[in-house]
Length: 216
Image (tube, rainbow, N blue to C red; front, top):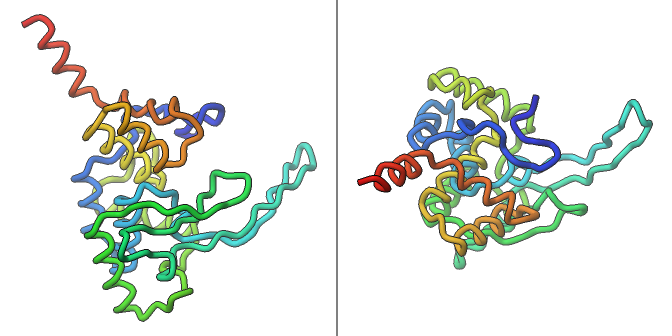
């Protein structure tokens, strides 16, 4: 069973997100700098794993209905996709009928780490930063999670999408205003604000504080 409701796209597991300390702990147990930088980008951008590492074209076949759907290939992040002066990265957004590239702002520390990573590994302008597959990332992340003592998140095994989910939860906890929620919707590329507003329920500490203050 998926931890995402397939009909609404809403997360059902209210404990299915990583804290900032847990994400930082996972970074410490990475096996090399390539893994560490990949997890850092997942943690700091809130992007889907495919938008970061790309994917090859593939055909999805429905065995029962005999329907085939062709999914185009997607290019992951390359040095030429990073706009250093404006602190933005061009990502291929996958939740569209046809993938389109959009610019997303990133923090200065992430840019600094990426620049060093590119220089050390001598990655050319049109080469992908991360040469790995989704399956490879899943296995790698589970190895790291086992070492870090974070085998599961909520009711599910540690999964790349947990970083995106955690990014949204942490951002909502920082600012729950309507304007901030709208900006988060645009950043995550959610189809509706209702889907983004779902993250408001991931803040039980605030609710407890309000309940206590009401009767004092």
